[in-house]
Amino acid sequence: MKVREVLHPLVQHKLGLMRRADNSTKSFRELASEVAMLLTYEATADMETEPVTVEGWAGPVETRRIKGAKVTLVPILRAGLGMLPGVLELIPAAKVGVVGLQRDERTLQPIGYYEKLTGRMDERTAIILDPMLATGGSLVATVDLLKAAGCTRIKGLFLVAAPEGLRALEARHPDVEVYTASIDERLNEVGYILPGLGDAGDKIFGTRHG
Ligand SMILES: O=P(O)(O)OC[C@H]1O[C@H](OP(=O)(O)OP(=O)(O)O)[C@H](O)[C@@H]1O
Ligand SMILES: O=c1cc[nH]c(=O)[nH]1
Ligand SMILES: [Mg+2]
Image (cartoon, rainbow, N blue to C red; front, side, top):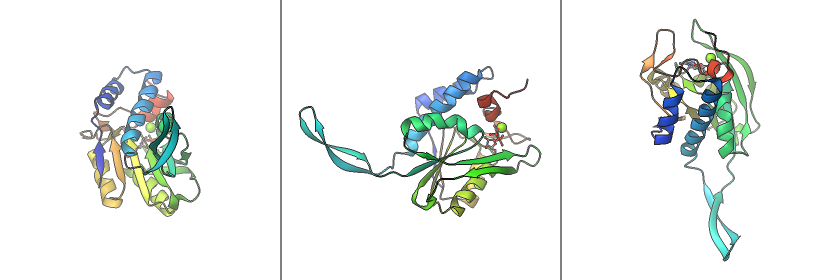
C-alpha cells in the first residue's frame, strides 16, 4: 500500500502548531486548511498533463496543462470539512461528494448518517479528506461506499494517521493511496491518536467543552 508521510518543513511546522493544546478555533481551522493544501500538492503529483501552445509575450510558447482531471473530493463529515477550503484552493474545479459518519464513542464503530456522491464515480479519482485516521473504521466504510459506487482510483488525505488505522486499511483496501502529515505513535485506550491532535471535529467546529 502506498503511504506517503509528507515531511516537508512547512507541513511539519504547521502540524506542530496544531498540536498545541491552547489553539483557538480560528488558528486550528486555518492550519487544518493549510496543511490540507500542502498534502494536496503531494497527492496530485501524478496528474497527467498534455502539451499546449500559448501566445506568450515574445511569441508562441510550448507549455503544459492538466489533462482532463476528473476529481471528486470526499470530505468525511464533520471534521473533513475543515480540510476542504485548502484543497479547493488548489483544485477549484473539483466536484465534492460528502459522506457523513459519526464514530460511536463506546464501540468505535462508524455510524453512517449521510451520503451524497457525484455522478459517474467510475470515471473519477476520489480524494477522501479527514483530519484523523484512527482505528480506520471510518475510512474503510468510506472506501466501501466509493467502491460500491464504481470508484477505482481512491486517495486519502489525513493530517494525522495512526499505525492501527493504516494496518486496517491495508487489510481491506491496499489499493488506496494515503498522504499524511504524520504517522503518529498509537491509539489510546479510548481510540484517540497519541500524540495526535485531540478531537479534530470539536476543534474545527468550536464544539469543544471544557
Ligand atoms: O479511524 P476512526 O477510528 O474511524 O476515527 C476517525 C474518525 O473519527 C473522527 O470523526 P468523528 O466520528 O469524531 O466525527 P466528527 O467529525 O463529526 O467529529 C475523525 O474525523 C474520523 O472521521
Ligand atoms: O484522535 C482522534 C481520533 C478520532 N477522532 C479525533 O478527532 N481524534
Ligand atoms: Mg469528533
